[in-house]
Image (cartoon, rainbow, N blue to C red; front, side, top):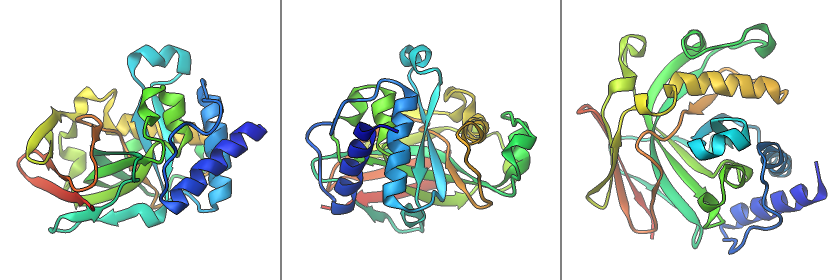
Amino acid sequence: MTTDAQEIARAFVTARRDGASLAVYPGKMPTTMEAAYDIQDAAMMLDGRPAAGWKLGRIAPDWQASMGADRFVGPVFAENIMILGDEAAVMSVFPQGFGAVEAEFMLRLGEVGDLNDRDYGKDSVQAVIDDVRVGVEIAGSPFPDIGRHGPAVTASDFGNHKALLLGPRVPDWRNTDLLDMAVESWIDGERVGASTAGQMLDGPFGAAAFLLRWLREHGRTVRAGTWISSGAITGVHPIKAGQRAEVCFGDRWRMKLRIAD
């Protein structure tokens, strides 16, 4: 881990704790996923909190060859995981930073055991998942241009994560076709995205399998109860203070939130 990685990490951790913004990237931008995860690891050590979950983000096709992956990973802390009730949640984003809403399926891991004992795929990983919910990730970073410099930069600041909102459980999810469920995202009454999870790489269970492989490769363990934010279904939709968002999963579930002024 380089000194530069530690200084970049310190700048992001400090800005996040203070609710501040970073007008420019605080150091040399990483150009590989290895460099990005070095910064992320340094930031987690400085922050001191264990990960209670992980977010997965899609790497665009034109970046996949150079990054050696089609997804990136970022930590989710327990303080930033909340269950959304019937009322609209009031959330926050970084002033002068970046904020966005993402419609996602949220998966909870049960007992996984030693990650070296088994190599999970998108179908076999379902055996260690004990809960599936609809949800919303609030993406966020003190650096407003975090999404404009490639996936390594995005991953370096905790994967551009701010909060994870858990919606209703999906009953009988093993026998429910999650991939074909219509999902829509709205901001201030305007539809900003519509798609299905089947259009997002190999879907939410593929994301879970990717994460377990990534955790193994990076020498990490995983505890029962760990949440997985499996990836944006309709896209990453920028949002700012004062705006309202609504995410619809089929005609059954609606999640509402407002970004505080």
